[in-house]
Length: 215
Image (cartoon, rainbow, N blue to C red; front, side, top):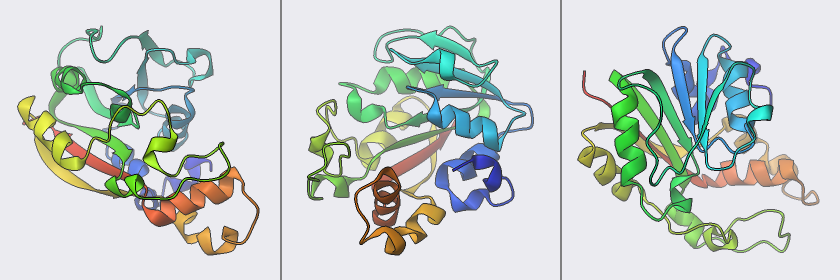
C-alpha cells in the first residue's frame, strides 16, 4: 500500500496517524529501520520530513533519498545526533528483539525535543496464545520467530519511558483499517502476504505506546 493515499485519511492507520502529527519539515528518526520498507512509507506520507535511521544491520541503500543512517547497537551505542534534535521517533517491532530496552529509551528521550513524541510498536500479548502457522514464511505465534527474545508488554514499556523522564500519552492496539476490513475477502483464499497482513490487522496483533518529552 502506498501511503500517499493516506495523506487525507491518516486515521486509517495507527502509524500514519502518529507520523502525520510531525511538524512540517520536521526531523523523524526511525529506530530499527531494517530493510527500509516502513521508512519508505513515511516518505510517501510526508515527503517534507527529514528522515534519520538507525539499525544494527540495515539496508541504507534502500532507504528514501537523503535519509541519514547510523549503524548502531541500540542496547549499547550512543547515537550521533545532538540532544533535543528530533521532532518524532518511531520504533517498530524492535524491542522484542532486545535483551534490555532502557538504553534505547534513554537515548530516545535525549534526542526528543521538548513536547516531541516517540511511538513504540511491538507484538501484542495476545500473540503468545495464537496458533502457529504451517507456512513458515509467516509468524503468528510470538515464539514462531526465533529472533524474538521476550515479549515486552505495554506496562513494561510504560515503566521504561517513565524512568527516562517521558510521559505516556497514549497506548492501544495498532491497526490499518484498510487491511483489517479486507480479512473477510481473504479468509478462504490461499496463503499470501496480503492474506497474512489482513489477518494480523484484523486480529490486532501489535500493541503501541506513545510517550512525550515534557515541554
